[in-house]
Length: 394
Image 1 (tube, one colour):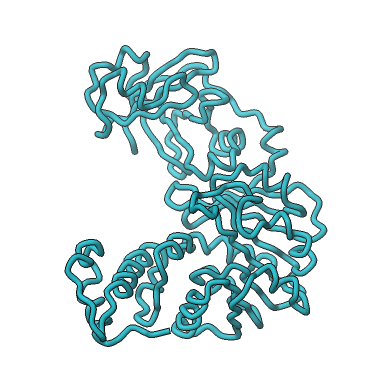
Image 2 (spheres, rainbow, N blue to C red):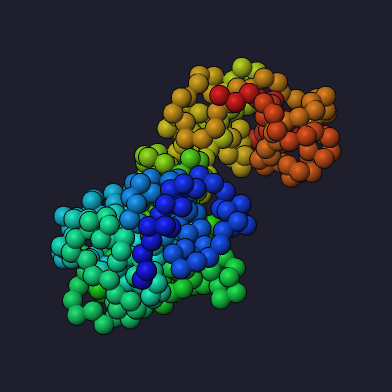
């Protein structure tokens, strides 16, 4: 693999903050300069400034095509994976690790730390060459790069792993995104027996759009399910498999830099949170973030923060006292009424929860422009009343 030339490196430094599309219109190719490659490096550094700042600061890192960067983990999404490894390190019999779908290598660089020997396995030869350069630049030790199929590597490996990580490709042959476990490549459902036979702990990265119940219905020996959010957006779903585990799995909800909830589905089913009978102006309204919505500990959330639910299906909460550390958005209720009571508003952000109209339909009916400082919530109370709340965000 050809490294970045001095001329290319100089251009990258001078244009690191420029728009890549604008640069593409005025670049010319010569023997010391590869426009496509240079633009790829600039785009890569810009992306990694957001995802992995410490990589972006390393001038010797080489970046692959956009798709590989799009799929790679960020600083925040690697943390729960490292936490899983750390918590189980005493139970791991073998101090070796394998990443069966190496990709750009971000997860490998973080999760392989502490193992005596680690294996990066990747079918794409170019990514393997990039990984070889980058792992050297990052001063990683005791690793081996395998250009091959991860499933075949696992089947043919003469030994046992302490931990294995796999991130199946969630795109079909046509390029469209897939969600179901069996539609991803490789199909983890089809080779999970080999996976469980060959390792003490397997960590599988799944689509954030996947229904959590499919993890336990399709996969065996699921000990933990991690819903990983970043800044309120659900980014990843992780399934932790441990051979022989046959209890109810714990569900971990992680957002940006901390675990915000850990629970069992049976605890949620057996909990009974209070429902609000009346709302008042001056009360505080809470909307859970996407990771909480995915994990669905709705009753436990209300109990933990001493909140009342607006209704069972609205997933909105209220309190008279402000809860500063609630995992989601917080608002103050300024006015309560029906849709007709808010037609005087010209511009607002509209959210609907458990309401017979979609937000766009409601906005069109009310002739309200999107945006501004007013937040309108259309929802249904436990007694069936359809209401709208005008709120201000904290």
